[in-house]
Image (cartoon, rainbow, N blue to C red; front, side, top):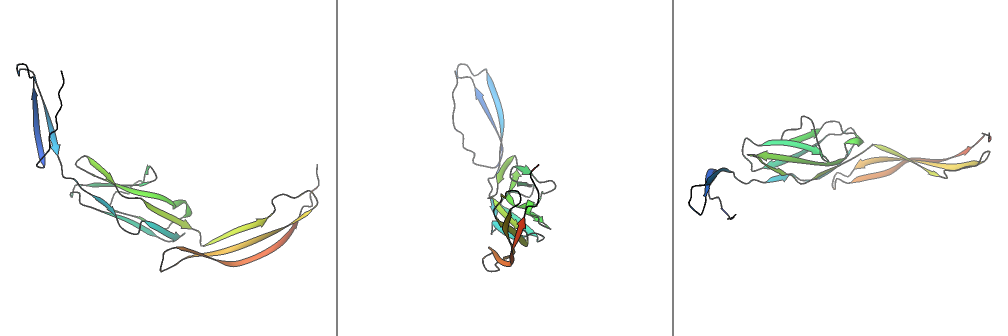
Amino acid sequence: NTSAGLITAANIGQTTITAASPVDGSKTDTITVNVVADFTVTATAPTTKNLLAGSSVTMEVTTTAGSSATYQWYKGNAAISNATAAAYTISTAATSDSGNYTCKVTDNGITKSSDTFTVNVRAPYTVTITGGNSVTVGSSINLTATVYANSIDSNTGNFNSAVAAAGTVGWSSAATKT
């Protein structure tokens, strides 16, 4: 025979709860419950970070957890080695650093996650080539290459891209079918 009940903790600390058999009270079981304070984890704004490769970026959280709290930063679901403080800095960002980051804070056995930081890293220059991608042996094709200079708008933090150079080149296939 099983019975259940709800016990609401009123104070922080350890509480011992003992349950006894309702038949004669001779069979008992005891559990000690550690009652801990709830806490919050807040991501500092802005949580979307746009930057150019080679720049640095810092993400930071604040928490109401106690001084014994521990921190662990993640990129996606993977823990970042040695990223165990309230702030995480990427000193020289590369495009491979683009992604979603979170910080998990643990205090007294309870773990809470921050909101997600989204980091977008672009190269200072990008190149696109347009035109056909198929050509028959002995024929030619025109390809257009465009170089874009990327920058960050200082007011909005958004990416700006402007054409830095463009040109069309004719290319012909001199190869023969073998």
